[in-house]
Length: 150
Image 1 (tube, rainbow, N blue to C red):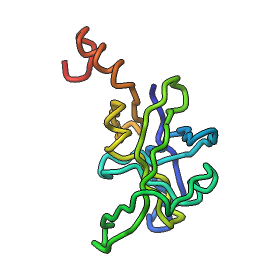
Image 2 (image 1 turned 30 degrees about the vertical axis):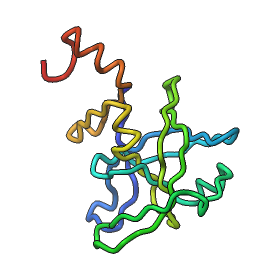
Image 3 (image 1 turned 90 degrees about the vertical axis):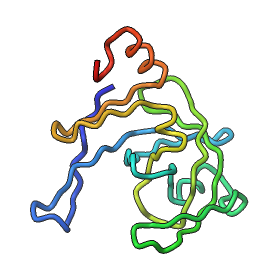
Image 4 (image 1 turned 45 degrees about the horizontal axis):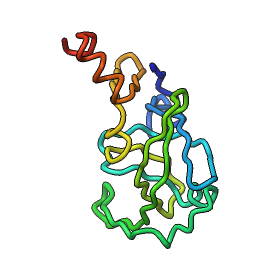
């Protein structure tokens, strides 16, 4: 599935905007479901969501496993891990993800654990698009000689 980067306002740039690889996903916890527009970030080790998402999924955030990591400024950031199910909009299957929920209003992030473990992502920043494939589809294409780099 090919997806165009999205243009978002960015006051830190002279042109006033930046293009980002944003992906619509569904999150499910128990019987609760919601869609979330998330940044696809290969530099993030985890899938990270604000606690407002946990609240809408009726997750008791502090009951999760505590998780600490460091942000860009090397200050520790605390969150809580909960298992959720994730589905990329347009695909039919669900994958389990140990999501970190933070007290933050930041953009949800799809990181390496859970998301990149389950999907092939091909960034084409120069064309302002990216491709998302299921792991199974990517392996089948590569075996047939239709994958990238062959």
